[in-house]
Length: 156
Image 1 (cartoon, rainbow, N blue to C red):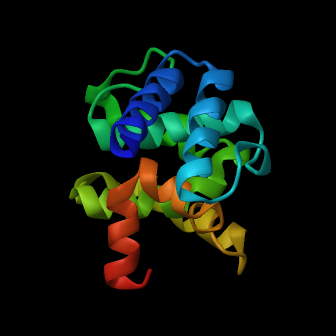
Image 2 (cartoon, one colour; image 1 turned 135 degrees about the horizontal axis):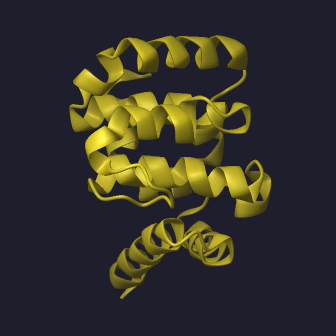
């Protein structure tokens, strides 16, 4: 019963990101927090930027567009650069982006000069504070399990 509820929350979360419904995304996130633990939605950065950032990450995970906009999946580098890595308020998700890309075998995307340059800049800007995906904890790992597995196996 709990497994089905979790699966439903994951699907509802990805759908909420795709249609830009911050309230539904927050509700799904918090429902999962109640089951697996982690930081509540209210502890994350601005809902607007969090929905966009997580939408890009969900796009990478599901290989379907989960973020509003006109950039097609075929132009993934532009989507990642403009919707995740460039906006200052979303740069805190760069560590999660790199983990997810490595876990999903998206090395071509990480190797693109424009993406690599922004990742390096963003990670340098963050300094020594723990990445937001680690701070969010089990709830983030539930929605993006590939990155969690990569973190555990490589001690990233």
